[in-house]
Structures are given as C-alpha cells and as structure tokens.
Length: 101
Image 1 (tube, rainbow, N blue to C red):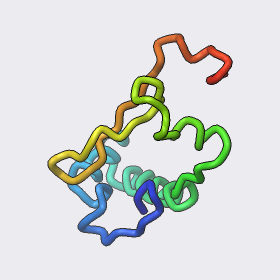
Image 2: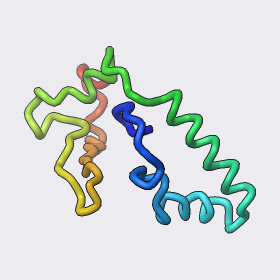
Image 3: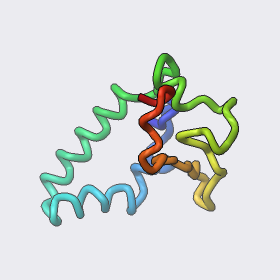
Image 4: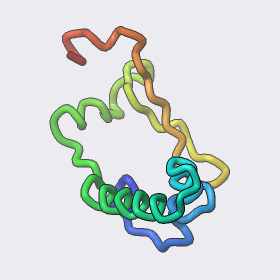
C-alpha cells in the first residue's frame, strides 16, 4: 500500500524492489528470518497507517496552499524511478512558534 492508500502490484511497489528488501536485511545484520519478520511487521503497519487522513494537525502540516517557504513538507517532483521526491523542512529550531507548537 502506498502513502495515498493505493494498492499496487508487488512488482510496482517500492517495497518489492531489491533496495526495498535490502534495507530490512541490513537492519537485521543479514539475519534472513529476522528481516522477514521485520518486513511483515512493516507491511502490517503500512496497512494501518495509510492513507494519511488529512485532518487536524496532519492537515496543517501537509497544507499545500501555503507559500513554498512556509511548508513543512513539499512535493518537489518525481525521481527517475517514478517515486515522489519530498522536501522536509526541519525548521532548525524555528518550530517553537505559535503556529507549530
């Protein structure tokens, strides 16, 4: 399941790529059974977490009507692999404002 809630076939999923699977194997120091268990838990989490409901604080953080410099997250475009490229503004200690606190 993608972040927007769309279900995609395994070969089209970023999780189905060699790179997607390798990150679990690396996180488990090459232990295949542990990596497989971690991968399954990740898929279960994705099913619960996505799609993101654009309500309350989440809607505010993802508000695309704000000027580009004020956005915490902004879609910058698409990679050569067809994946979204996202900018995240960590705000470098400017996050403690009335708007973001």
